[in-house]
Image 1 (tube, helix red, strand yellow):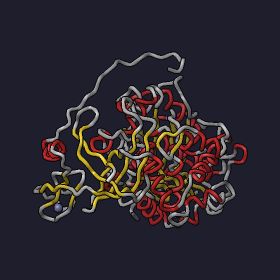
Image 2: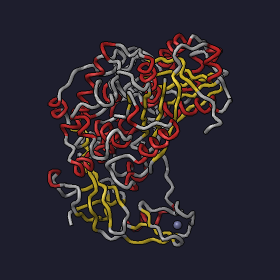
Image 3: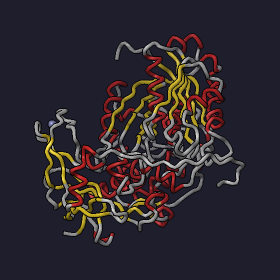
Image 4: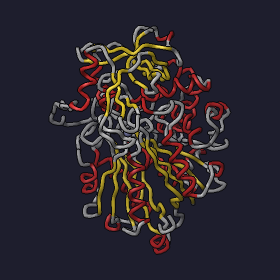
Amino acid sequence: MSGMPSIKSREIKIVQEIPISKTLRFWEGLKEGKVYATKCTKCGKQYFPPVADCPNCLNSEIEWIELSNEAEVETFTHVVFRPTSFCQYKPYTVAIGRLKEGVKVLTWLTGFKLSEIKVGMKVKLVAKLSQEGNPTYEFVPL
Amino acid sequence: MICLRKVAIIGVGNSKFGIRNDVNVAELTFEAVKPSFEDAGLAAKDIEFVALGSAGAGAWYEELLPAVVAAEYCGLTKAGLVRCEAACASGSAAFQTAYSVIASGQAEIAMVLGVEKMREIDSLTAMEWIGRAGYYFWEFHNFGLTFPAYYALYANAHMAKFGTTEEDLALVAVKNHKYAIMNPLAHLQNKITVDDVLNSMVIASPLKLFDCCPMTDGAASLILASEEKVKQLDVDTPIWVAGIGCSSGTANLSKRPDYVGLEASVLAAQRAYKTAGISPEQIDVAEVHDCFTIAEIMAYEDLGFCSKGEGAKMIREGQTEIGGKIPVNVDGGLKAKGHPIGATGCSMIYELTKQLRGEAVEKGRQVQLKNYIALAHNIGGTGHYCYVTILRR
Ligand SMILES: [Zn+2]
């Protein structure tokens, strides 16, 4: 790459199989158009992303709650320079939004011109399938 | 803390930072180790313990066990050895580890190494690796956040809340490039203007290319000794570790209370000030974690150099230049000296040691010393880890 003398390392391809048994309800919910958070049955704390174990009181009995879909944008960025595994996508906007339950969600924000996006604006959280066909979620105009 | 022994820095070395495709990770480490031995008047046989900070082992460079490889190459085999990982604060984590080994009486002399080789892979793959340095599963896997994008989230929130502007961010880059030109070790040595920054390509809005630190190769080495050993060796100007504070932040950025500052910085700084028994006004010179321009402005606020929301005012008024209220990153900072991830924390302490000794003399880079106190602020990830180290002559 640099013109300096070098030897190429051996190539390896790494793909990890990430367990989702404990958050399966969340991933299946997305396919049904629902975005779930978890709620600790003991201390009542709500979590997004969902967790199977409560870091607040260490209880492992949780319930699944469907999130309301209106969110307020706390911040955002438009990602122009993308990493290798996202090069097939056009530049995308990422936002962090706060839901009325108090939890926050970080995800893509679509359906706006960049110049229209402002901190404090209201958006809607929806479940959807990614360009690659995987269940995901997104912020869209109300 | 009263039971801890005093620890001093007695030798420092720093390789040339830049695109170093002329050397491998071990050879690059050697470039820092040798001058640190010469500086301390010691040899490898004197080192009882080595802590090496490096974050990208096996990812952006080929060696999975860089501590072992570097130790063999530098004649340090048989010393106690560990690699420390705290992302971009790995060097500071290694410093704290070696400090603790001496302070607790487990060794008299120890070495801290920081090294990173970031330019052996293409830059998009490097962006991929660094983007994964948060919560891979929830924030990278489906959303492709990059390191600049994480900080851009903070930049937009800070701008919305406090009226910080893109010009303010650019001023940080202009200042740090100005000092890098005076530092022969620095990676980027070109003079830039506010317009150059504003006109550079958008990486993750509002951050542009010149708001971002480069991907740099580099290494730094520090030799630490107990007070007893300092006396025995009759060290000329020992630089004492006055206090270290560390903290951490949530893996998910969505779990942070706000995006206008880093809670880990605030907590680490409070802990360091308390241990050292000092307040921010007493600091003569600081190295802060300016991986992106917004990070330097937030650091002024989080470290208590000014109140929250006043960071942009400090850079506008030149208060962090040499001669100002508190000179910051006068070696060029991560922004222009470069940010070889694992080496950065050690390189900050290298610079501060030189400053406190009065040896940072290249073309007027020496700050005026009043209290002989300096501070290094090293963030890992996006406020995932933070180490604040206070030094005193
Ligand atoms: Zn609970």
